[in-house]
Image (cartoon, rainbow, N blue to C red; front, side, top):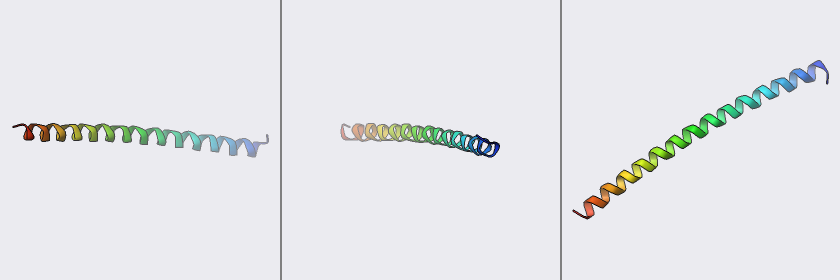
Length: 54
């Protein structure tokens, strides 16, 4: 592998690592959003349940 190919490979490796980090961050955001939605749905269901049984 010549110097130019090494630089190009290293550059691609860095970009792939950055993309992986971005994907990981997005997955964390999605997981937190899903947890919040689940909490809100559960709270809504409990509220509706207590209203129908009052």
